[in-house]
Image (cartoon, rainbow, N blue to C red; front, side):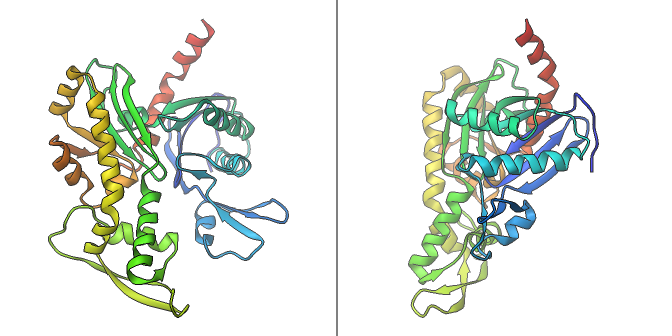
Length: 336
């Protein structure tokens, strides 16, 4: 357990699927699923993070395991506040003085959604809350120097949203955020297996399929995986074998939605910056970009070189952490 004093800063990637916390001077100190199990009778939190994720779809009637963030925004304010409080105390130990916290948000959130994040962090014990847009944090985390007057394109595919931005001189020139990402891929897998095999599977099984054999570009060799679920005809548990070629069928539609969004951002990009992107390529970050073949598909459809950032899952949190170094500058600007 980390103990630190007044003035300690924390960067939080408040993701739909995972919460990653970065402490200045220590690096990434926490990586937990953004899942909370609550007793519906008393309102008490039963479990948070990994422990709560194991309960998804497996709880008795009075315990509800939920993900309080949906599609990149807070869907359950009270539970999000409790989750943040738990993670902040876990990172800081019991003697935690109120820290300054920088939190990542999708690029196209509303003022109301921004306020919900700030209020939840304040209630969870922050001294001051700062917000940073996900694509900017992802670019910093990927090691891109965003302060220069040249265009960089970042496609950050998280759990709830895909954030696409063209960044120059430290800010977004053109950006969009679509609610198609890791969770949407899982939904498409569940629908596909229900339609094609008449089998009901849960979110966790769909995620396992996506991670192990999911692909959006034809594979040289077809891989397969056994899946257990409930047969919708007999109502009994059954096991079937799914191939990666079927995953391609299931996932191509949401993948093309992301590629269309990249196209529309490129169309709105000023010519000089578009030329920079053509030279430098497109950077992909976030856990969602690890689906087999997504980089190849994007490269084929845009004709631009596509690179997957190093430590892609932690990129946003690392960028948020690096941005903590500028907090004193931000504070002095605000005072002046």
